[in-house]
Image (cartoon, rainbow, N blue to C red; front, side, top):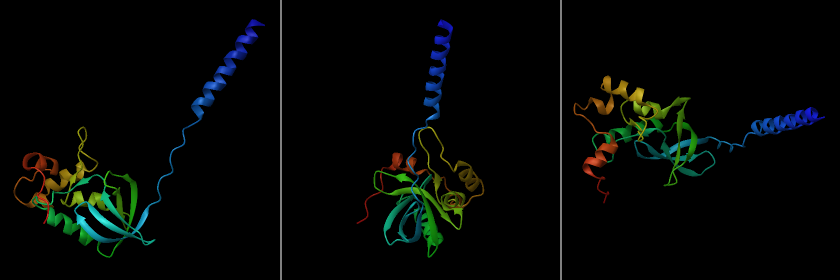
Length: 174
């Protein structure tokens, strides 16, 4: 009888533990992609998207860090993004929002990753964090070795974070 009770208790414990592991927490549903066209380019990583439903949102390209507005190559970076987005439909795979309310996401144009292209062509750095060189470090190294974009300037260009640390923030525009 004691063996039967022990077996029943063990079986009940296994069922309980198995059910606990089988129940997965509900993941929030991914936001549907945003579709539309650019209405304004702010800089080499930010633009205003006029969505197909008529609303407009500011989009920040995830994983890229273009030169600061007063830094070498900032204008060229902004102009490259503007040229690529001009009159072209895009899909934004939103990854969330930042503290400024911008949608952070991957921008796809005809299925091609525009974030990656900005780094591949030397118009932005791979966005670094304290522990990581960012998602596009390979593309940045290739752009640097092939002297594309900002790496063709002949001078050593600082990452935006180094630029801010060494020179302070850019002066506000009048």
